[in-house]
Length: 364
Ligand SMILES: [Zn+2]
Image (spheres, rainbow, N blue to C red):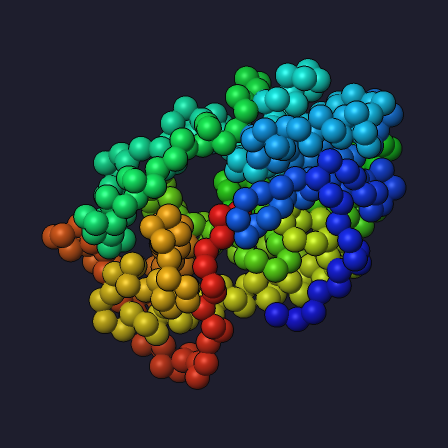
């Protein structure tokens, strides 16, 4: 993967901050499972703090925010909430903080309204006919559906505090002046519909959210809400906007450690997905169901929830291959899609070796 440089040898504890550039504070909030934490950032301005991402909507995170406001962030109000994208670990406390400080929420339109839609029911909270058709098409069987129903949780709304009822729209190219410095909004896609990143040329800092992560790969998945989506294409296309940033840019990701080596990381991620796609092409020389292709991408035995996430990622790779005319798909009378390689040049492109499959899909 190539070596990235990690300039900090420690990280802030939840409830504390670490100033990593003038007026840029790094915060951490806890997360369950192997993800362990989410990184948040506070940008200082005489008028108050601009907070970038909010943490999960749970009580522990809220308690840590309360500690911060009577500790490291005391003495200034929160002026503005800036949420990179609608996933619960990023938007979770936006409702609480917005109420507490009467602070406006800044998001892209796609992310805000997707959050509003999901909080009204959606995601995994119920099995609609669209979800059933999608997962049946991917090869899930009756016993998988039963296990999936058993694993349903409260859904999106239960993972966040009630959403602010209004927002300020951010668009690609917008500039926010915070503490006398210009922060440019760079919008990416693929991990979520309209993911906002913040770039400050003066400080040489990119707040990357989940768009670019240092160790794990961002989840890029097709979901039942948009079964014909091609998010991996969106995600790869987005990289043009980030590959042109200076390589010495300090990248502040939502998970993992701040790093330098943005272009190296992007090139490694692009190579990773290209390799995964080639491995899938090689695997489906005969008509193959998505579910049967999971071991090509993931090594670990997956539980039902993980399998559903893994399927989303697998289908994202297959849809980009379809778009490139490398494979075709046929819908059987059983409602199941079967994919088959059709590129006559595949033999010439074959590789003796592929990257080892990932351990498991990550919910980021
Ligand atoms: Zn995310």
